[in-house]
Image (cartoon, rainbow, N blue to C red):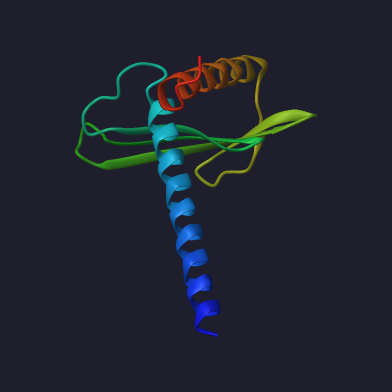
Length: 122
């Protein structure tokens, strides 16, 4: 019985450690993605990250000229029949051809940067 409890505790620690490692990698990927289009200014948080096979998120936080805190999150969902985006809780909209081309370029840059900078894959 004691052996079972110890085994269960060890398994729980392994799962927690792997979950934390996954979250850490996602955070690092998001930071790299936020730097795709140039340096991030001081006091600005900018992230771009792939959540799963079809979902991408662009997130920014900053202070405007009046010192007010601002943030914007755009979620992109990619389907075989089109790419849709939703910003800050608004309804989904289909991307225009230009927006889809920009997203495609961002995804390509993201994949290249994450593979080479984070995972050291050439």
